[in-house]
Image (cartoon, rainbow, N blue to C red):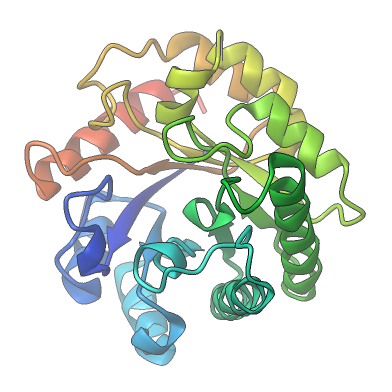
Length: 272
């Protein structure tokens, strides 16, 4: 398993569960100094990133790009994949494809979380889930040209009413014609929705493509009450070799949150 840390460039999301906020140059350099294998970036749009400069920064720090998030599509641009309006759904899928293209050039994944949307008075639950499935089909097929999967994240009930558990995510992915979509299993969301996190990861099996490594209170690992022994055992049992990525509140501050996560990562993966 490999280490990863989140960097947010989206001011509208300030205060959210992203560890580093001090711009790409300083954040990537700091991640490299701490020994992180990779970073996950939450950017306002592809246009806001200078991809050549990003590549130079990553190379200089000796870290990889693990993934780009699509969340700004919702947080900043108010685009979501289950919108009642067909034009807005189309715009949302197009936004996702731009993120896939940018990430794919680095051999990295794109993540769909908050952009999945939800059912409401205008869109019933079956229709909303169908719209999401269509978007995952589109994105998964688009990502295949880069030999990376599209990553889909079930969220807790307070953030979506689409898929909230790993089992629901597995069912959705197995209904698709594309096999190029994997699950992001976020330990914070799982702590709310799953009866047993380790069992849920085991059920996810080879569909588990990315992990958000965080504690029960969304603070860095070791700053809450989550029990990690069986979680790590389950990940080893399914032969998970991807990233454990810190998507956590920058508590008590970004630099200490990054250091604490690395300490926890090394502790829990020391026999790797």
